[in-house]
Length: 419
Ligand code: HAM
Image (tube, rainbow, N blue to C red; front, side):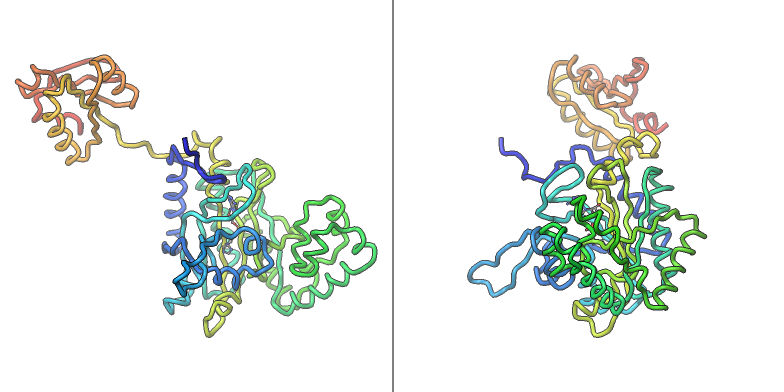
């Protein structure tokens, strides 16, 4: 047996997955989002430029496909996330109508160490608004997500954590302040090697360190939200006020920086203790410089987020009964008693399906095992056809719930089953 590739999953039952996709599509339509799809293959450069060379995703986790020797094309990869591709598409198609509110969903790929809720192939729903810089847009966007998780999916055990990373100048100033803190003897000598490395290349990621001693040290670190310019401080205040007025519970987490380089101003995550170590099921924020960074002539302020389908499914599994997951249409099973009735069974099934009556046929086995199969599929009726029924142009209709049987003319079947 050849097993599946490490860090990937088979979805043997897609009911919950499809339910989330259908629900989010409906929810997003109320907020004026439309669906787009971008390729799974993208150029490596797209992610190097957008996420940053020193991020974990780019430096360690990319699935890169080397070009064929004779090809002059650059390196391509399996996309690790959905935001850079959406911005690339925005630029490439010269989208003029802004704000451009779009969502997309599909598989993403990161070469990570697999564990509960962490895969190498996973699925995201990514939602982006490009061309809107108002902080009220942030409030509306975050509210949209919160309403989806809480009201449409009925998840209760989660928290929304927020931080504000300021504008480019704020960030520049803050990096100097943070570096000074990291260079003080008491800090420099006691932080772990990974933090020493991050200090040089991606200093704000020190806050993601899992080492308890480092975390203790960073309790005294300066916070970016305390070092904002006046307009940013005002936006940060407004965002929190608006969320409060919209009854969206949120918690300020001063150390939330997110792992990708393109963020500024608002950043947020939805986290749940029920998920264990990988507790973030949705994350996002503003990325006002990305469109230009990826080649646009002008800046388009933007905000977006993505949730992970696998993590959301972990949260939803225990709630399955409370969700209005639509059932498949009632199925009817045709049971031809011998191969001599196979053709009539095919014709009858074809006619029923033409009238939107879900039908299947059991072709093999003894009468007893065929009836057992029909019963195990949850069929409402078994339509039994033997030699007599074939001659009389009837079927023996067996109600699989109460066991009653009656002979019905084949021409009356559609009317009868539609009742
Ligand atoms: P991210 O935080 O890297 O952000 O991923 C978003 C979500 O994808 C996570 O919260 C998690 O649910 C899921 N996820 C990430 N990696 C894995 C994995 N290895 N296995 C399972 N689930 C995973 C982004 O990707 C940004 N593009 C979000 C964004 C959109 N920001 C602005 N717009």
